[in-house]
Image 1 (spheres, rainbow, N blue to C red):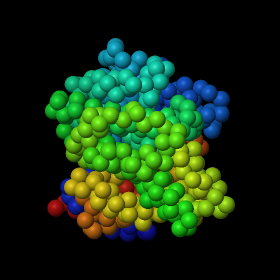
Image 2 (cartoon, helix red, strand yellow; image 1 turned 180 degrees about the horizontal axis):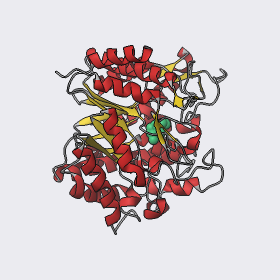
Image 3 (cartoon, rainbow, N blue to C red; image 1 turned 45 degrees about the horizontal axis):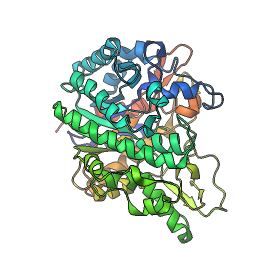
Image 4 (cartoon, rainbow, N blue to C red; image 1 turned 120 degrees about the vertical axis):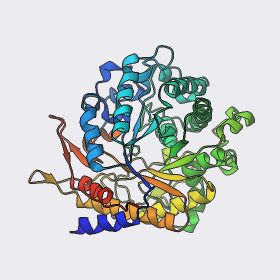
Length: 462
Ligand code: IFM
């Protein structure tokens, strides 16, 4: 009853042309790793203790073999668009040179089938699975990486630009740079604070060059996906830390993309350990090449307190190491929280959208990921995930509130279609609206899938 009422209320708020979709990423769902090259996430997963339950890329959701069934699910849900990522080592096993015909053919058939079912393909070029051979050259701190990424883009653009509705160069480059290079929790796990900033810069440069390649091939609707959020300080004494965390999480990306360069306060606070000489004015121009849309992945605010305050337990991804140069603080998410220890606060989604709309005026915005990991008790063969439904309902309404108040929001994508490998958390955290049985690979829609379907089937027709 709760579910139908909440779905109908949201359906009434959705304008006809608002794009409602669902997202996944290659490494998290594809499996069948022997049919592609290796990536830095395969290498990382092979290191003892890096992935909580020892999960590896196989079988994941065996999407390489079960993709038709997954497209059936998308069609059953009635989504307008499916956001997926290309696996670089599936397209180009060594990251340079030889292209895999088999890899191209996989995405070819997926894209054609989506179009056949009237589902817009929304493609991300890079969602963290860097080919191992490029990782060995230095990965995102190698000075050849931006050009190499542009060459990889060329392959995708010449094969798919006629059929992809919307392109994102990167998914959450903050994670690649700061969880992977500054901290040790994501691949490659460098744990080198200065490298976090250099990786961030090279990711941005690769983005700019990739956009140019896409545009020269006539690809349409070009953008990038950032994980932006509201940074909330619990005490005026930590105002400096709030500004620095906001600098690394939000402004380090938004400012260069919109032509304002690298934020001076971030440079000032880090110049004692970062040699910023890798920044070149002409490259800043490439980075700020215009985009057609900006994606925001929103899950939780960053609430921080003074160093002595005790938080509410482990908060996945939050650590001072991921924000190098921050004065000492503690992450203090409030209750309620998801299983990731992430505070549930839809008000921060609205605040993030409104702040981004101000910082990046005019550009159409999308929520490109939003969702939660919850315990998912299985009752009588049915996963009645009311906590996830509640999360979606609060956050979709908050996004639509921001739109009503002027943010140029054009779509919303839920994370995620399937339970999948949650990176360093392995299978211990499930975000899917469809349950995946790891033994049998059987897919069972949860109540949240029915909720999203109810929204989409009841939406306004005009
Ligand atoms: O699973 C991830 C996804 O790959 C990127 N955005 C956040 C999700 C949940 O942590």
